[in-house]
Image 1 (cartoon, one colour):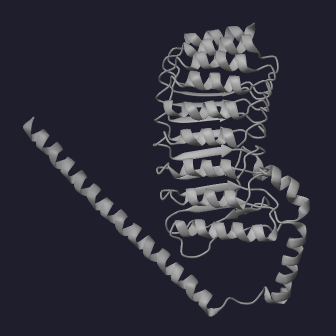
Image 2 (image 1 turned 90 degrees about the vertical axis):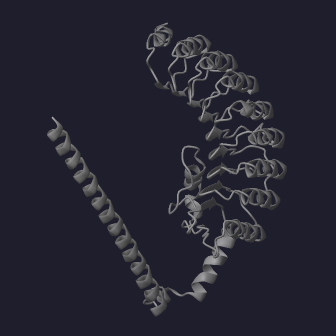
Length: 396
C-alpha cells in the first residue's frame, strides 16, 4: 500500500525530466505495484530519461510488463530508457511483446537498454517481436540487449531480430549478450548480415560465450559482415569455447583477416591464453559478466589490439585446451630459455624508441604552436573589445 502511494505520488512531480529507480530484490513487488508505477510515470510529461531496475523481483511477470509499457508509452518526450529484469523468471515472450508494443509509441528514443538475464521463459517469440518493433525507433543511436542464459532463444529468433536491424540507420553502438543461447552458425550469419547493413556503426559488443553451436563457419560469416563496417572504432567479442588446435588457427586467421579489412597492415592481435586452469572459473565469471566487457590486461584472457592509426580496437576471448597449452609452453621455453629473457635491447629497438620520442616531441611542439596562435587570437579579441569600450565611452 505504501509503495503504491509512492508510485501514485510521482504524478505530482510534473517538472521531472530524469527518474532512476532501483527495486532490486524487492520480492513482494507484483502486478499491483508495477501497475501503480506505470501510472505514476505516465503522468510525467516532461520525462526524458528513465532507469528502472526490478532485478530479482520474482513476482514480476508478463502482466507487470504490460502495465508498465502502458504507462511508459504515454511519455512521448522520452529519449533514453533503461529497464532491467534480471532473474524475473515469470517474464516470457508475451511480456516482451507487450513491452515492445508499448515502447513503440516513443519515436524520439535515441538509447534503449533492456536486461533480461536469466529470464528463462523468453524464447524466439519475444526476440522476434523485438525485431519487428525496431522499425518504430528510427532515431536510435545505441541499443543494449541482454538475454543471458535465455536458452529458448535460437537461430529463428536471432534471424528475425537481425532482419529488423536494417531499419536503424542511425545506430552507432550495439551491445548484444546471447550468452548460453542456442544460436548456431545460421543465426550468427543472419546477425552478421544485419549488422553489416548498419554503416553508421562505430562500436559492436557481442557476448557469444557458451553458444556451443557456433563453429568456424559462423565466425567467418561474422567477420565478413563486420568487415563491411568502415566506421567501426571498437569491436569486442566474447567467444569462450574450447576450440580444437585447428579451430584456434582458424580463429587467429579470422582476427588477422578482420584487421586487414580495416586497413591494418600487420597482425596486432594477441591471444592472451597463458593463464592457468585454476583461474579459468573466476575469469569466466569476469569475462562473461554482462555488467562489463572483456578488459585488456586482466586474467580473463581478453585479447587486445592496440588501436592502430585509424583507432580500431579489437578484443576477443578464447579458452585453450590444457594439453595444447602445456605443449605450447614447453615449446616456448625450449626455443627461448629463461636466460635469454633478460637480454639487453637491440640497437634496432633503441632506434625505434628514439624515433617514437622524436614523434612525441614534434607533436608537443605542434600543440605548443597551436596554443600560441590561440593566445594571440585571444589578445586580438581583447584589444578589439578595449577599443569598442573606449569608443562607447567617448560617445557617452
